[in-house]
Image 1: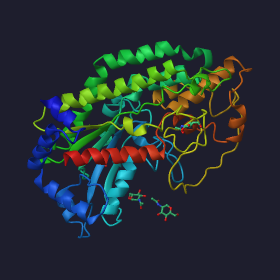
Image 2 (image 1 turned 45 degrees about the vertical axis):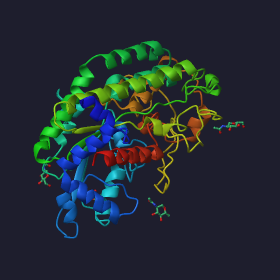
Image 3 (image 1 turned 60 degrees about the vertical axis):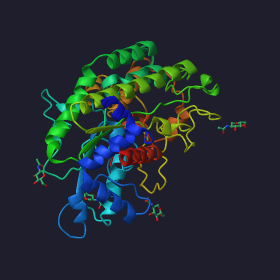
Image 4 (image 1 turned 60 degrees about the horizontal axis):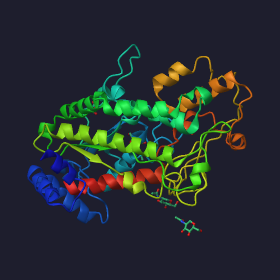
Amino acid sequence: MRLAALLALTSPFSVAASLALQQRRLAAPDLQHVLANSERNHHGRPPLPVSPHRLTSSSSNSGLLAGFAAFGDSYSAGIGTGFDGKEDACRHGLHAHSRLIADDLSAIAGGRNNTAFQFLSCTGATTQEILSRGGGGGDESQIDAFNASLPADFALLSVGGNDLGFFDVINACVFRFYNFYSGTCEAALASTRAHIESDDFDNRLQVILLEILDRERWEKKPWFVITVTGYARFFNEVTDECDDMSFGVWWNGPKLKKELRLQMNAMVLAANAKIRRAVDGVNARFTEDKVLFVDYDKEFRGHRFCEENVTEPDYSRTDTWFFLIGGPDNARNDTLPKHAFELETLSSSSPLVDPSSCLEPAQKSGDWGELALCYMAMSRQRDPTLQLARGDFMAENSMWYVPTYYGKTFHPRSLGHEVMKNKIYEAWRTVY
Ligand SMILES: *[C@@H]1O[C@H](CO)[C@@H](O)[C@H](O)[C@H]1NC(C)=O
Ligand SMILES: *[C@@H]1O[C@H](CO)[C@@H](O)[C@H](O)[C@H]1NC(C)=O
Ligand SMILES: *[C@@H]1O[C@H](CO)[C@@H](O)[C@H](O)[C@H]1NC(C)=O
Ligand SMILES: *[C@@H]1O[C@H](CO)[C@@H](O)[C@H](O)[C@H]1NC(C)=O
């Protein structure tokens, strides 16, 4: 019964869906009313789950209008999608889907910047770091940093890729930053499968969801829902061309064969299924769904790596919605300042990446970019004659040593985040 209700959320035409919708209407009649109004007042703007009380007081000039919090990893932080001034350590991007939603909320409020948006997501985050940093680090966890005194009408969450070992797979199977020492692709995939099969991730994800609901005192806020997003398959897995192409950073890197693309896509689908089950497990504890899983994978069809007639790596293809190493973003309006950096060479004596000491901090941060840079420096130290696969490209790109240069690969570009946002709105329309 619960499963049917959950599945119904993703298939608006089923009978179960309309039942779920009716339950919602009963649960939050004010919200339904306000959303209908906001839809009428703002043509084409998707309804947003903002608090009815605050929305109706939008003509007054007092205080904050609405709010939400975004928790999670780099897919939530929007790494690579632009920043103003200086990039922060969590690599929050200007076109992260959560930020786009905050902008829409602001627009509903007449362009006034009074949405309490708590952008807690951080590149490299695992479920553990959302719950408790622990140890001597002293850093707050995302849950600890969450200020429940600020208005929050909903929350967003993306987590799992770092728990399940996506970077290890992408490193071992695709880029091989640490060259021969990167481990085998098979071992990395097997390790990820083992993590997906174990209950640890599932349990921690459920604890995170319950913890957020608790802090928001869900029983007093019937409209409060946590929207959880998954991941999108990286590759078109049927095209022949890519069988001979490579993303490897060193000369003679691994080829993007169909079998590999298929296995990596299967990993993403298995991770999504796992996240959906955890969401299901939490919803089963309530009389109505408190968590919504939004699967945007199908929206990426035609926008993955290795699409028909594409010669990878294709740095000019705007229609690919994932970043390549050092590749440009594809924001519709890219007016962001281009940052100038001095060109440095990849040498083992680089003060930026010290191969003898970089690994521990890189592993601690979980930042894919820091890990990639460190592994590359370590490879070069072990074998100074190693040749980069695209040395020419690196030499022309003065930002090669900025971790984001690598860390953003296999993450959504701005057009991908836009589609994630729209898919979230579409899911909300079936619930609210
Ligand atoms: C909105 O307000 C926040 C916090 O006061 C500030 O950091 C941000 O730059 C503002 N955004 C705009 C578009 O004015
Ligand atoms: C939480 O937000 C409230 C309201 O803005 C503020 O007064 C308080 O200082 C914040 N708490 C923390 C720990 O930042
Ligand atoms: C790929 O190229 C072939 C031959 O030019 C063309 O027939 C086909 O429509 C192209 N496919 C896509 C998806 O562009
Ligand atoms: C895009 O750029 C145009 C022209 O510079 C500007 O008028 C418009 O507001 C921008 N749109 C967004 C969404 O930033």
